[in-house]
Length: 270
Image (cartoon, rainbow, N blue to C red; front, side, top):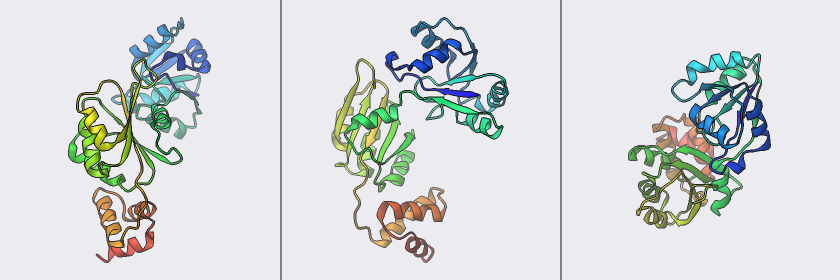
């Protein structure tokens, strides 16, 4: 079978007993970066020297078939550099190929930057959405934020430290300066820090420079009475970005409380 292994996101003490046992007996490991995996084995005091197969964004399509065939006869452990493979990391293509081929896939749960940041953010955790890495270009970023600006769920993003100040400024422009948020930095590491406040306050905080790996958590939009024409405008934005009309009307209906049928008909009539 294929075994997805959740690795520490910073603190080696978070490596689970199951992961350590598997690392000690694995004969084949597909790793996002084989050097990182070798360092992990050494840091955990594991003497096992398994076969290491690189599996990253640039070769996953080519390597997936090979790894799936190996997994028909042996267990193959799959690791990303930190956290759970497939979640903003390589692995999805491999899992898709394995399930299509009838090869069993399981996971050894482990640390998650998404859930850890959400838990310590101080923002609602009952409903949330993970939006992945923020777009690099400002125009793409603002379109990305506009698509979720009215979402009532808590929003979670990954961002690089070199862009976080501008990203928080763009978020304030789109979501509103008073929207509450949190920036979690270096989670589980020695210099862990969680900055909380409004987007305007956090943009000012980040302007002096921020280091380390970051997760941005933003409060969801407050539900308010939205006129039908405003809902139609939101539908149009989503359609222009490539969303199918029916999906766009359902999404806007969920965010605003408007009727999906009314939104659909009104959009067709404009």
